[in-house]
View 1 (cartoon, rainbow, N blue to C red):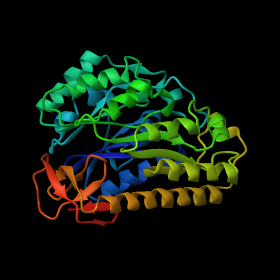
View 2: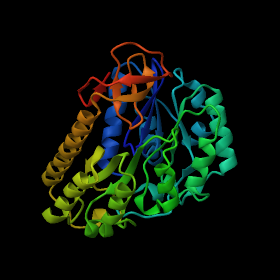
View 3: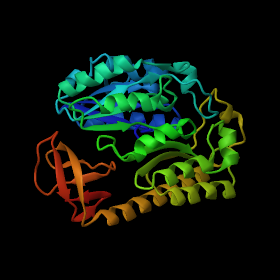
View 4: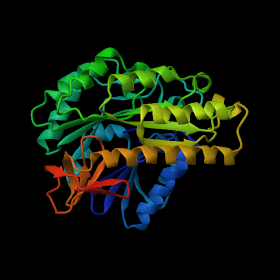
Length: 358
């Protein structure tokens, strides 16, 4: 996920969208179905892909709101990519599956162990995307940090692709980010966008061990200390089994210490068949309250970041005539219309509803 975006929605045309679903938690899947129904009510043809659709394909295929359930392999083969009307951002899957077994996650049981696509093949796909008019490529997968042929090596090859303007990565496992990866971001290549999204999940080491995560709190802090100028997003689960108040507050403190501005935060929800579902559970009201506090924390950090941008300039990749994203993955609303797909230098004059205005 990009960000590990829980739900990623991409417009194919005025009347068609792809919704990339996630099955990490029951709450994530509930929100996916909610997003599907919302877009259907807006008159969209909804194409559904991703892990939740893979695990429960019959359920999604039977939903009257779903136009089609598509496999992510179709994206890699270009069957869906060619349908984009505004060729601004393309998603390039670099691997699938996961060889790790986090105690809260059902995905590896459905997707199997990790499989990576070879670098030359991916470079060719990226060149095709750029030739088709895409300005930005996002590397996606279930666990892209586990890419077996060297993630930094792939990134370097893609940054050399003529015509590519921007490269972003979806959610990253902090335990697998080595010094070479960090150096690549520190070099400040103008094509590599200064924003990363980390699968943090918790800021407490005891909880991380119960989750069977491979990183620890210090690994997140190391990344921030090494890359002080980037924005950081995070996936966080609130109210994991046996998480006490002190453990939860360690996560709250980490959000501020690392200055997480983009949060994908969900109360823990049981997934039958996972080890965490058999652990002693926390009251659902407490889970929701903890998630609410974390969302408020990340929203406050984002607001402080937006304030720091006012008066400065940024480059905006326009996705519609009056909106786009800057380098740090912040939405910028434009006072005057611009062509979708263009990159505009924008003077920031204010903020509005979690966005910059310029």
